[in-house]
Image (cartoon, rainbow, N blue to C red):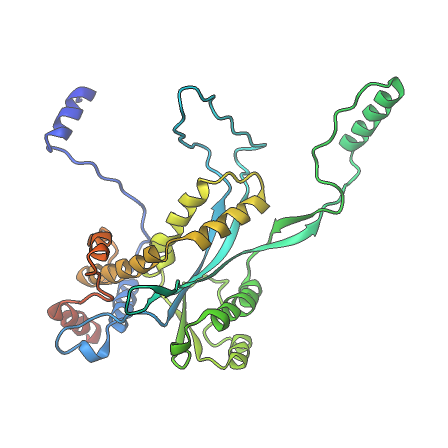
Length: 348
């Protein structure tokens, strides 16, 4: 067994390497085939015979749900030597406040001068309901009333309560079922599309991409179709392949980044958590959103190389540097032989 100093030495010499392993969904052969089929549909049909390129994906809106926690059990802070250690308290470490949000993100748009006129952030909405704070008489409250009565008789000061006054509206999380998803999709997402979607693309088909969660709305849902008819737009639902979070920009990088930013803010309750997440969503850099869409196309290429598998590392292409140099592409190219091999395997 190596000593710690010996292990550090061989690591510095490059004889061993550090590797972080994360769990990924198990894929059956049918799953791999569906992933290949999905990647092939993202190729622009006008380029398949010479230099296959992915579509710009500007007409695809990615939606998904995500639990956001108020804080973490362990957090690292960097403080001045004169500062006192921060003390964080919670009633139960196993019941930290958390809220599920529905987010909708599209690809940002830029004019010829590089100015962003559509940031792609259609909205993020918490699955909560407002209820009125009430008091329930319990033995514990009866005991408090009795103690206060004794203190009043003895003319001793009574410590004030820091509870919310009666009648205060507080947020409570709700269960997300298909009816809930349908109402949010119609009342929140469709309304945001009507208000924010770029005018030049309102005549084109708009796709809402979602995963295969049981609570999600079916592509042929009649209530959704009726609501879309009232918008005057051509909006349709598409499902990404099963067991494929790497096919959605939200799971690919957006949610993790947004959660880390939300952790930088102090959320004492559910209402503050909602406020902080919404604030970070609004302030999220639209250029980072655009880069995630390019990362997604890079993942498509890796999936095609592995025959639909997911045992790959997320590709990096130094997008920030290319963006500074004005050389960041709007879409990636796929090797012609790779594309032809994928199509051949799908035809068999």
